Amino acid sequence: MPLSGSDASAAKDPLRQYTQQTPRWQRCDAKNPATYQCATLKVPLNYGNPGGKKTDLAISRLKASRAKERRGVLLLNPGGPGGPGLDVPVSGAAEFPEEVKRQYDLIGFDPRGVGQSSPVSCGLTAGEQDVERPYKAETFAKDVKWARTVAAKCQAEEGDRLRHLTTRNTARDMDVIRAVLGEKKISYLGFSYGTYLGAVYTQMFPRRTDRFVLDSAADPARYGRGMFRAMAESAEPAFTRWTQWTARRHVTYALGRTPAEVRKTFWDLIAQADRTPVDHGGTLFTGDTIRAQRATFSRVQRAATWVAELKKAAEGRKPAPSGTPEQVPSPLRPASARDIPPDNEAASAWAVLCADTRTSWPRDPEQYRRDAIRDKARYPLSGDFESHIKPCAFWKPGSEPRTTVTNRVRALILQNEWDPATPPAGGRAMHRALRGSRMVTVAGGEGHIVNGTNSCADRSATVYLTTGRLPAKDLTCRAPAGQKEKTRTLPGPNSPGTHDRL
View 1 (cartoon, rainbow, N blue to C red):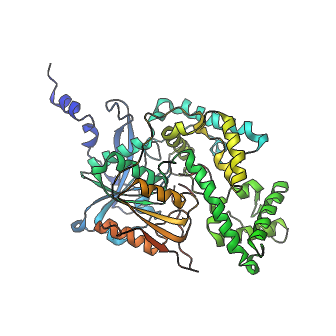
View 2: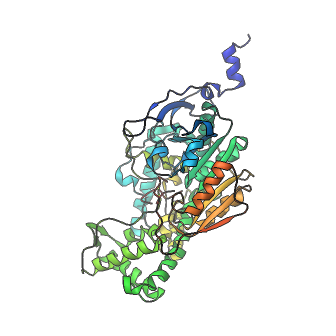
View 3: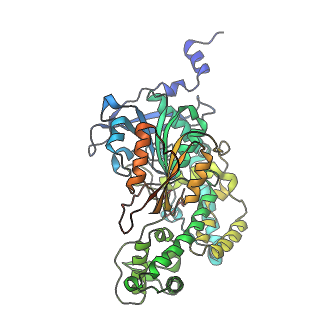
């Protein structure tokens, strides 16, 4: 019996029911402009079975301000995995020059399982969402139990759905968004983990890739356990630079006249705080919780001020001000949006990371013990935090192997020299994998995320997005000497936990 028209169409193009959707745009909320609109699409949970279960995909749009100048759409991802991106077009999390806003519809979206897109939840307690777990022999069994419990609770709550919460499927979702919006190609701005997502899209859909800007890039070959360890590796030179900078300013900070003295002051403070926690603005800091602020040392002035305050507090000279320094970027922050499970960012971050890279995580807990002991000796500031056991050790594999990124797609990579979450080595590795790319490095640039912090790098991105012209060769911009550049905080590989965010 011949197929009906609709059946034949579905057989020829099994994704047609998704790519031919008509979004029902409506105002997202009362606090933002009426031009900021939201809609919900349906996408297949399993692209290998498009006729099976569906999942929601929340998208948003801020139309190009000049219809006559419009050239297409710019999809946005703030990082993670686990970072919601629905409000990025209007939240101020990223900065968009007027020239870009005139030419592009800015498109935000919550990736599958995140935020408003059928959010995943594992029923994790606040304690179970805490990933800042330094290695200690006396707590090792407890930490193994934590990792096993998180994996088991996620499996119990979400079951087979976890296999399909992957970066490759999010890239496929992006291509459904492209088709629904009637575009032959998409442009893209991705931050941190979002650079990996963007690179996966270029690998899967090279002919549908237009102008891609990857800000603070992760090494696509080390995505997974390797990205944690890369942060520990990069923390040590950042700490050394901080000791040198601080020693030259002993009159201001009184932490030591030489780098060796500054280093000794810091580690003496760690030892003292391990014996008697330091009250910093009402928060008690042990040596481990001080080390957990490792990202702070990428910003030398901020770190020097903070350590000097901690030292005074430890000496009982005066109470330190309230607050904590900048954290390492992490996808595992508690979610704050309406009607979203409180563990959604943690649950979705582990879901994506573990499903993507399950084979890079040893099964044997003793391997993590050995690695943590070795890496703490190699990288004293945070080696044990990064190498210690994580829930991925007990996760079930995702639906398909990870993506090898290697192509000639044109892209622009932006990178700070002193990025604690996606170190420059990762940006250079992404540059090598995307052989048609150019790289802009901000020499002396501090912190995670370049966007909006350096006029030279921003100008390169704007020129590329508005004209299609990449720099003729790789470019080095400079952070102005003695000038405070703005810092950016985006939901952003990176350590799930209290990190700056990937």
